[in-house]
Length: 220
Image (cartoon, rainbow, N blue to C red; front, top):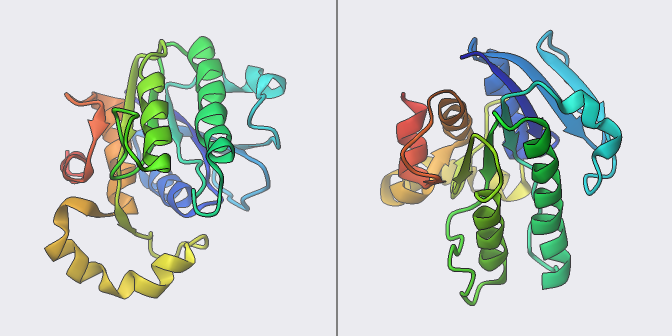
């Protein structure tokens, strides 16, 4: 099955890396980017929509029909944010976007970039982990064909990426060491992207995709 993919967050590190792999992968035939600002990408597969309000995608919904996968890479850090703000930017925004897509494309596979340590019980002490857990849980109740939550930990950026988080610039040289001693929490963004493509094409026997699953899926 050839993939027609919607990707969000391509002006960020993860989204940019996922986009680059989708461009290179022959199983992805069409890519729709939804961004708040132009990403500057040019490829025959790509169509880009500039839309500033991700809480309401009704004005562009006609352009979202006919796609069979969504790689949702949009996200913010919880650092310095109150729970109400983080909840709005993480849960409310994501769910509103996903609910609209589920109505438009019920045969779609939705892949959500979550994070290692997410709290699926929604009861833990960590605010960000509870919010991410609730987001995962409620996404899986939507009427998509399939929903997967990927929980990457430390990720090696894609070579040549423009949107690399400063933290990864500072500690990226430690990646080979981390990969050995923290193998359950370390992957490349390329592996995350390939895992998404594999989930969308073939499915998987788990909906929660931890780092070992990401690495396994990237090789299928």
